[in-house]
Length: 412
Image 1 (cartoon, rainbow, N blue to C red):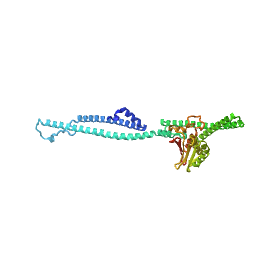
Image 2 (image 1 turned 30 degrees about the vertical axis):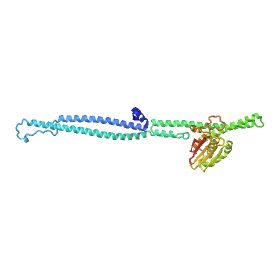
Image 3 (image 1 turned 180 degrees about the horizontal axis):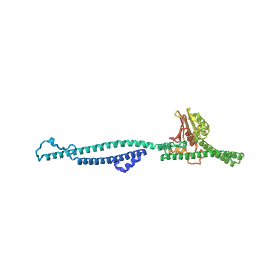
Image 4 (image 1 turned 120 degrees about the horizontal axis):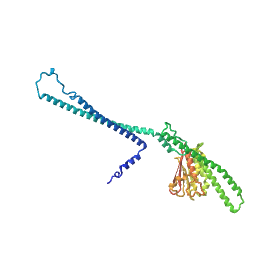
């Protein structure tokens, strides 16, 4: 049976390992490898020089003292006493001296080899210990060096249109990391100005359009007042309906711009009571669509803007009624888990399109010219929930329709 690892080339394994390592780990490994290579080169250099120097010193000592420090010593005539000529005595002494010298050389060589081995062994142990310590030190230094980069990463992760005012404001020398932080702050400045300009434009344009639309409606009602020819009555109704839709769209844009700006003033309010009021006000719309609305609530205290919170509940219920089928149902529930849940029946929803429904001017119907709804309801819901520190999630129902859940915190 083939080993799967045998089918992978060493180059591929190295590439896979390199891709899995973080930059901090790569930097620490580079520090360790650099220290180890430098230490190994130094160890080899010192060992070679020490070995060569020891041999030269030993040769020099041998040449200067052929007999060695413990070699045969000349005997004094006063102490040696009378000797008789011995042709073999001097030869025996010389042989003993040579044997002693060779023995001392062998001992010295062994001592030298032992000293070199001990030096190499303990130097290698020291090199290994220092390599480990240098790796730990490299890891720590890499962490300190990359700390500003980590701040940039964390800031980028939590960046959204609601906290564009936050800045890194890195301190320290004018190096590459400081330049990176300053560039990031400059980018946030441009984004904040762009978002602020966009919100201001939407709010101002919506506000300026309300007056001409109101004047247009008045002109239609006065100019086409009764009595009218029969063929102009439908024209007047169409004009008034279009005018009302335009006014509703402008009001929705103003509401969206207001919620995007955040909360100016907050107070404790009961979301359950606001939800019941919104459902009661939409009862006529539910009857028009032959939809049954059921509300089950428990008190839910929320610190926020009551007007915006009521619009949140109203948009959820209105959306559930409008995008429903005849004889359908809408269930509104507030439970002890601080969840506002609105579930409706209706056409099946593609799960891949659920998130896009929270974008402005998106509808379940692909036709943008649909006469019911302006495609801002769920966008307003998410904007209001975000302004109150909450979240909105949606999921398609098993038999059709949507289940939208809003979670709001107790305090801000």
